[in-house]
Length: 212
Image (cartoon, rainbow, N blue to C red; front, side, top):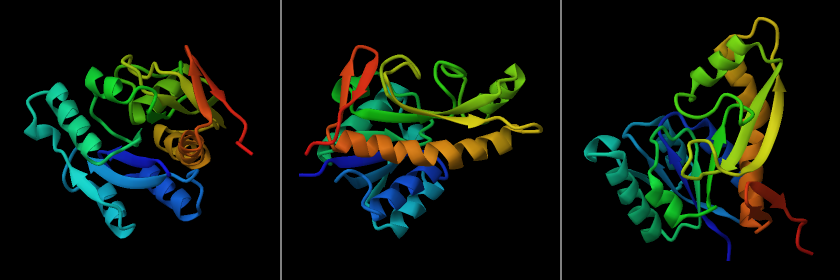
């Protein structure tokens, strides 16, 4: 029985689209995107879900008194939907510990840098790329990691490096990292999870060979 995936979104949903496209090509390791959940109404990601005929829901942050209350509502919804894997794809709410406790080593996040560089509090969206360019790195990239209670601190599943080019702006670097890294390694990590090929030992994620 294939795993049921929920993708949590807050905005345009480009990484969601990469997952939808991978699913259409049969590249999610037998997993199925069973739900898209947005933290705000009107997010373009919801239209992407609609077009792909994926059930979609809104759990608005503003209707909950705290991130914790919102997290609890999300966990309830995910359990009701019988979800096996949670994917954060541009989800802008910091989830509290209830989510990690409900889905240990079953929440994947994509971060637009090579963790542990340019990550943690305040490092999201264009800020990540601004910091990378300010520091003068020649290589950046993307990381898919399991979500732990530490912000951007969970075990790393996959990483892909992307060259920083002369004259890059945060916007051009963001675009290149999405196209060359995020849209590839996020579906790949989801596929490995759905094939039961990820084993976590401490901080290290072992990728197991395909089962014959």
